[in-house]
Image (cartoon, rainbow, N blue to C red; front, side, top):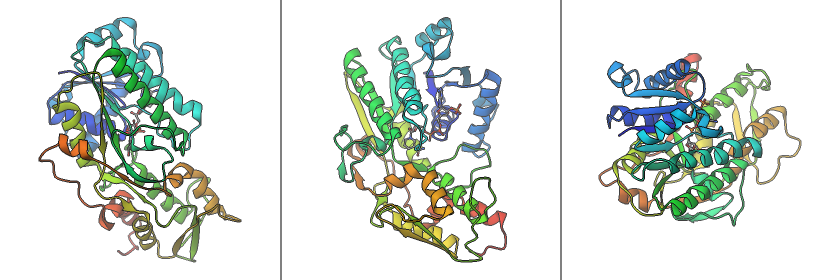
Length: 379
Ligand SMILES: NC(=O)c1ccc[n+]([C@@H]2O[C@H](COP(=O)([O-])OP(=O)(O)OC[C@H]3O[C@@H](n4cnc5c(N)ncnc54)[C@H](OP(=O)(O)O)[C@@H]3O)[C@@H](O)[C@H]2O)c1
């Protein structure tokens, strides 16, 4: 079975590629940006990070890289290669996306909506047995503040927090319409915040918590351009952030999320004109209080205050954090729970993901690496 995978150089895509190649022995065609040799180098580097170095020549033979761009006509391929691939692939995993939570609408819609439409046009010319797996997000629930979000829910009645979640919602609508119009099944996977609790090497594709951890470190060290110098160790630093102290979010470990996605997207068969939707989430939400406690523990001079409204007279550090984290902070007001009945029914025997405890959060925020960079810190 040959799998065409978009977004394979990214955090999630590289994990999916690694699992397909190494655990299911599938040939993978990675469609990505840049010339083929550079793309292949990036892919091999990404796969070595995921496999902690265990990606060798035997595995490399199952990886093919083609230069393309999901926003371009013919996916940026020549019409001949487009037609050849369409006849060759047995599955398409669409994982490419622009995940900039603070991004402009036009930019996000170009990749997430128009790009998905181009992938759907390609899928339409593949033979009926070719499976389509679309990687979406729990963010399609938009601005819904609370409640039990079902895997069958797809609605815009609550509006959206960011252009990102609006774009992911719109893309999912296109996918549903495609399934009906072409009388074919589509698998829709909706991960929550997928995080790795291991130290990621410099330059590797990161995740939301590693990005947040790097930002906090930069603020505390005052070393990066454009980041206000603050040294919480030397003098108490109070940061007021517009987040609700009762909020929670769903964080799930990358190993569980990857295995669940592969079992659902690769191992199972689907029939009929329907979008089969699965939440790739942790059974328990993570209270924002737990995350803030881990951060304050890392930076003893730092105190983070939760503000229900806009912060009056923000300091330079508060302005920086608010501007950089606009999208993320908006989700930090929700108290939603995600149903995972479809996902658990489709993954019998798969153990629930490990708890998201302080040790996991420290690892995901990269604090172990930051401590190693500053040996004087004791934990
Ligand atoms: N990570 C999470 O926690 C999470 C949670 C929920 C949902 N998701 C969803 O999972 C998917 C992957 O997310 P991620 O975290 O892995 O993102 P990521 O690390 O930013 O990777 C995005 C991937 O998309 C590719 N891409 C972007 N624009 C493209 C274009 N025009 N043509 C071709 N490829 C393009 C990127 O290629 P380059 O390397 O060339 O930039 C990269 O491979 C997305 O659909 C996202 O919405 C992720």
